Every structure is written in C-alpha cells, then in structure tokens.
Length: 68
Image 1 (cartoon, rainbow, N blue to C red):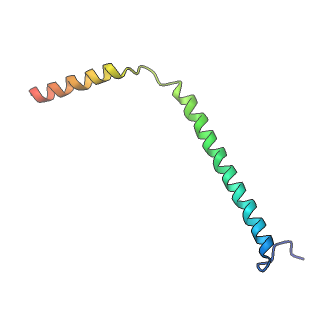
Image 2: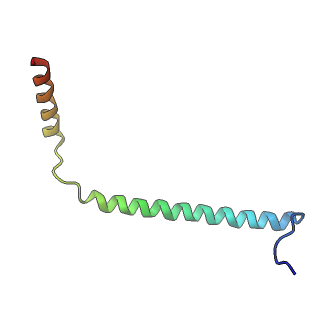
Image 3: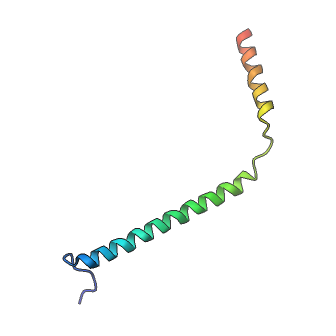
C-alpha cells in the first residue's frame, strides 16, 4: 500500500502544502538569523574608521587632480 496522498484528496494536499510552506518560511528565517549574527560578529572587526579623515583625504585627492 502506498502511504502518499491521492491527487484527488484536496484536504490532504492542502495539509501538505501548509506544512511545506511553514517549513520553508521557518528555514528562511533561520538562514536570515544566521546571516544577521554573522554580520553582527563581523561588525566588531571594523577598525580605523573616521569619516572626517576619509572625507579630508578625498578632498585632497580632488584638489591635486584639479590642479594637475
């Protein structure tokens, strides 16, 4: 005997579809959570960032390019 669901059994197909969709959504959230945790951990390793100094460096390069 087959333990599958008949294609004519609409209630069985709806149940399987609901379970599959729930599993897929849960899996997507687990992947997103893992990526968020990885990004949070990697963000602690960002060093030597100072937007003001970076902006001044870009402006110096622009002035040098214009005066050349």
